[in-house]
Image (cartoon, rainbow, N blue to C red; front, side, top):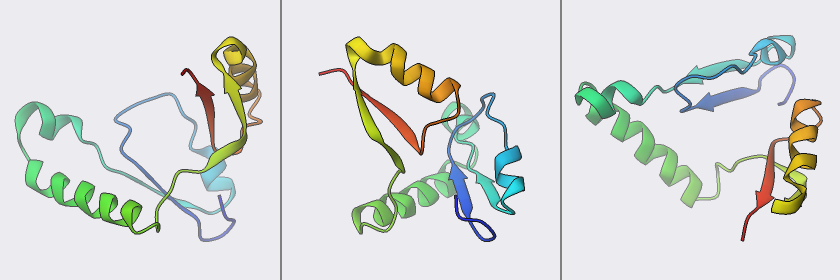
Length: 98
């Protein structure tokens, strides 16, 4: 996360993630909560538009997840968990299961 000007967008409906690190870096956060439209249909068109725009950014190479440089095998998933629990991951920590 870039200091003073970073922005995080999430489609995660809920979780236990602390947003404090974003505030410490003067970053902003936007949540797109998709569960209600999926369950009720209310606002489905607007959320579909948002997700289509996000997909277009991904396809254009303008939006990509940040991945930790380390990769773990399924047999070392415990090590990956330790990295995440210690707050040492730089982006998403990947465990290859194939």
